[in-house]
Image (tube, rainbow, N blue to C red):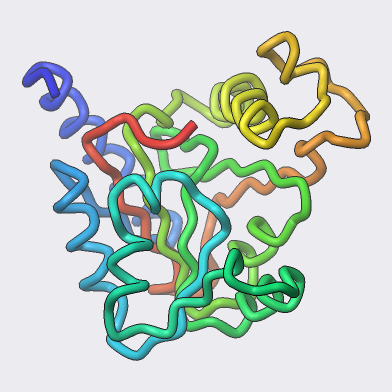
Length: 209
């Protein structure tokens, strides 16, 4: 990545990490995907039960593969015939992995979900939640973060899943009530009541959607 972009990301990450600390969450900055993966693994004890909510960023840094091949109880919902049963296991997992659809500069996380398995696990259940967030997802404020989630992340994910939503056809949010909509639940995480539960690894890269 261009050194000027990297410098900007380092400075911005400091601000985001400070904001996370004020919200009882812990932030980290990783200079590369490899560093992000190593940092995430350092937060996950061997033998821990780990699951995730389908975050592309987790796959992109190689974390899901590392967990599958390591000494962990990785709950891969794609390997289960009963997907609902696999999703329910997340609520009692030691660690839940996710990305964010967007984040604010002062540490607020914004996520949109269709089935709510991801946002509900972020809000409650797993003992620890680890976010992998590319610096491309940082926005000035909640309004900007929500716009990114609705007009960037949602249309791309709708296209990725082959859904018949207006945003999949137009590329931007139409505030639809389509049966295929993935914008069913909106979760804004502005504070963590439980210390040491939410950890956010900011990555000096463009990750996810």
